Image (cartoon, rainbow, N blue to C red; front, side, top):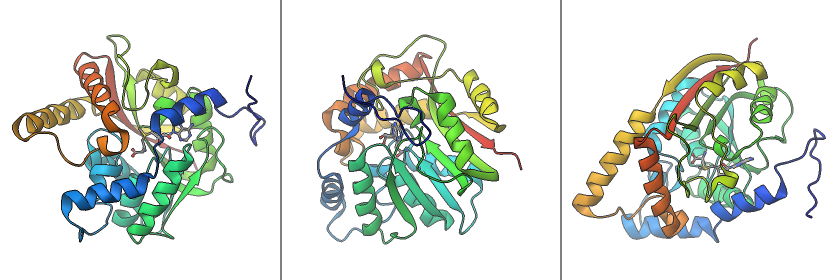
Length: 291
Ligand SMILES: C[S@@+](CC[C@H](N)C(=O)[O-])C[C@H]1O[C@@H](n2cnc3c(N)ncnc32)[C@H](O)[C@@H]1O
């Protein structure tokens, strides 16, 4: 049996087997070099490197930058705010928030390769010092209490089994009065989806909540639920639009397939079918830590 060391809080980190399975699903070789080469091949060697030009490659969720802009907008972030992005992936949303809203962003992710790639892409965009990648677990955040103005987490919670711990850690590191913007894929009424999905190769590392669980988890952690938006229809519309574009002009050169390879094709197909059949939904919510 593999040893699973207790974390700072005395609780156990995600089971090592889970970490290994999640890493197997997400991790790749020299990620940043591959993404930059693909971008230059598609857009020319002189393409400016910005959160906007990188967006087709580093926004790891449905509806790309539109979804990030909507979720970050819920926070109404101000210049100089310090935001924590939990499950930040390659740091695409974190860089965009830093550049668009003038914030400092700490981008935490479980996968060390993603954090290394995030730092390289951040440097390439000239944002070093404004965005910092930190390897770590959402259920044992390596930060002091009340150390962030806001918390942001986009489509990461589906990999996390211990939902109460996830919400409690976000609550702990947030300053009183601060807000938590959370996006997630939820379980629909029509039963579980087929796998693979974009966030999990199989059901062993996929932990989906029905939408009604969001308010309960939030309340139990101490949050006030400010807003809950169903974005399922927007996701379905974006998937239909992508299908039309592919039928008309072939697959795009840039997209999440550059990172994930051919394994993304069945995952995207299953995802679109599950959304259309009511097996999956998508929700954004805004939570606040009371003063
Ligand atoms: C679908 S990706 C989304 C990445 C990013 N939020 C975005 O939208 O571009 C989910 C991310 O959550 C991370 N993740 C999964 N479980 C985690 C955990 N327990 N702690 C921290 N990050 C985790 C994965 O490594 C992956 O990068």
